Length: 289
Image 1: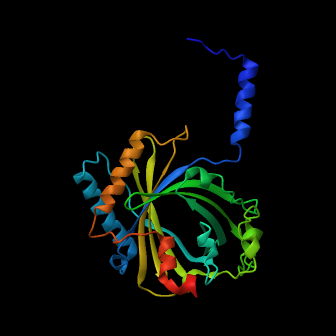
Image 2: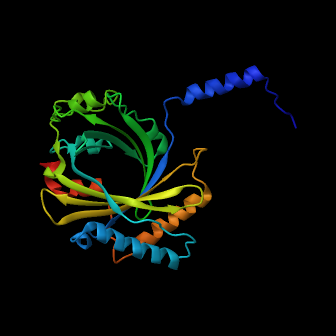
């Protein structure tokens, strides 16, 4: 068998070239598993309901042979207003594979542009760079029932209190490398389905997956000032290890938790979707006015 010998200089040159070739192309940093729950259950004291769900999940995991458990309990995390933006009548943002979300809380406004694709390479190579020095980007593997997988490339950045979002041109102002809307930049942007969402999130619980932890979040939405919950979601996030991979053990244990949650039919909303899909369905005529 012929062996290829590398001298030190050649090896360094090859490594440097390969690094340049992959510079700017992100890799998946985390997986997030998401399941919608029946919001009616959260009508009274959502944090207490979240912890009742947790107790049921712990029992269900034990019954399904999970050799660990979910530790800690849910407590209040975020309290904020959420808006999604798109063009009324055309939904050009959604049609191009993007979503645009604003969050506003006591610390100020934040804007996120996200591109999603079932193809990891397509999503990774779609540039969503922000305009702020405080912009933060990530590539995430989103998994929803029953086993739908979307690679989401997103950037979050602060949004000035004086910034109005009125037209598709605002997307290019905030995310300058996004040119897909240039030819229709004068089209208006408005909150999708006319929705202003009051979002409460609760976090705290974790589960040891055998090298990485699963970090759980419960999200509850209230629509347009209502005191009755309109949507609830349980999610858990798992980061890659120090080598940038999900080990087989972490993957199988994550899948067991995900499958167990889906099997909790007394809690799970059926049919399931995503929070973003729910926003667009809230007023079905928004995209076809």
